[in-house]
Length: 238
Image (cartoon, rainbow, N blue to C red; front, side):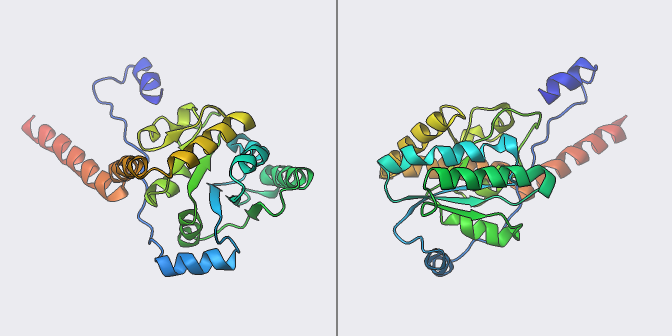
């Protein structure tokens, strides 16, 4: 869409779309993950995580509302919300609604909320605990997601909703049927079921690894350098 908009302005021959990068983050050791899982009392749980700033369009409310159906099929499922507050005015009402829904649906024992802003390394540790990281966004005016790149960088099993801002990462992620609670629960249940199959897990690992390499900041830096050097050479020839 951004390219089409620029082309409408007459920028066709000197236009390239450059991906939003992901940045390398230290991966936690198995021992560190085991310690964190025990600290959070999440042993023997099938963890479904979310990540990113807590904002209305990011679908966290719908994700919480999907949990009763998920629990009916996966009694050991646990929702881990790693969603920092953007600001009190933006995120406060969403946080309050999330807490109200958790209480209303009797989900207190099945949802862990972490609304603090964490260093990337701590966020990565939490996401690496998950069987699945879900980005249940609704449509918005955003053109790309930085938050999803955390899960991709960690090579996590990553589920996205079918909205336009995930088009650039869809090749390595699993697309849910929609962004409603019913669609999210249906998709998550299916993914957790498939995740028990060795071949499926192998295919998903190959897909997420390919995407992670494609958008890795080191790979993109080399690509950008090559583009700049190529343009300079053409200018010198003129």
